[in-house]
Length: 601
Image 1 (tube, rainbow, N blue to C red):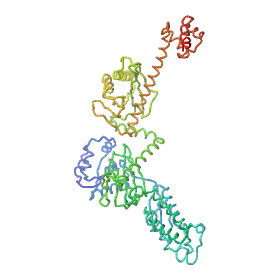
Image 2 (image 1 turned 180 degrees about the vertical axis):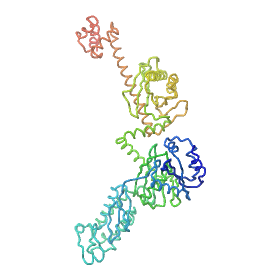
Image 3 (image 1 turned 30 degrees about the horizontal axis):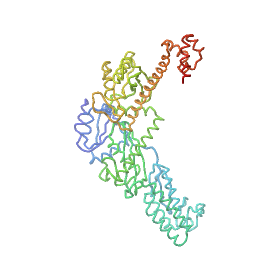
């Protein structure tokens, strides 16, 4: 730290919870952070060697520091969230969502209406939500309208207006969607009972409504009003079916928020569930762009505060996959087993699915971002010094040492570059020697690239275990490329990845994109080598058959193949056609060989 004023500011910071703000030389805010211990946290920026590039750039730009001391770490988290929203610093993640989500409103008025809205007006009305899916909100409203006959008009149904007969019933009354409160045909007390039941359904409490409908159905049945009883039974089935679709865990889990997070090099994905009576009544996943390699814990804490505020959550308990600090007022549970653990796992699964869908969308609309993400992930997973934009993979092929060949396939930006594929006939090795073949082909490949001044790959993949890897390394040593190109070997049986001078292999997650690309490379190299080997064997087999004809030499075989292209066409050719190529004497030998053969068979 060369700036003495900055050094003094860091040294005099208190050892208390608080929020720190970094400013550049123009006094523009760069970053806002929270800390349990301000001095310790801020000092770490200037004393550590930062691997993450953006953090290095940030530290270089810091010209001054301001801080705000607070009582607890939770207060620091809340203040950090507010300051990020207010100033939108360049190096902070910004939890934003431009969507206006729908709410279900129970209007504050006589005979309240129930409807969908995107505007929350502070007029004493009740608002439930917001719902992240309009479809979900509309399905719930549709259920409510099937169960209860509510008015849809905007009339002022005061007692005075009803008593004076100001309004008349409309079509909704005649088709039995409304009971006509505008003409006093329905009492307000009965209507409010329905509103109370609707309130419980929206909150996820179906029990009281089910019990009420069952009582009404039994009364109709006792009075032999079977048509009305059947109508109520249909409502019970409708409500029970909706509840069954919503219930995911033990119904005793109620009024709880669930949060989970997954992340990669550039983005994090936070999923949120609201659970009432064992039913998910809200679900939302946020995508967060990382700025400074933030930890999952930090991102999740920020997201919990923001999402709970956005969705107006009053839950006193949250379930999360790991411990977070969000204040003493909220109970934090990290489930280890049972129904609670299942619902956290479900949340995590939703975050993963959302991430996969985003990847698919990005691949279509922003292929460059998709490629950059894959390359960054491969660099991290394989512990490489550079992103593997250019990768080359080698494989050998032979059968009991005959016709040994090798292949080199090239992937650029994670995709096959077929014009750069190369195939090799093994020249210096005799017999089934995979190690010697690998040493030869790697040497030939990179000696040529060096001689021609061509670009070298960032990564070499060897199809095979430690033996093949060691053979390839010998060639790199001879060429002076040992430390200039990263090299790994992949053993097929357990998909083990071997590194030079490291006896312990790396095991990648079976579902990881990095392993899938490595496997695709290996499979493509194997396919290319096998195809070349088969073609070579086939050509050799043809030549061998022609050479078996008594009195026919290599030069004659070449003349025949040049004219007829294959041994099969030679066997089918007329004597005259062969005679034109070889003359009478040799043509007789060839013709008789095939035609005497047919007679014998």
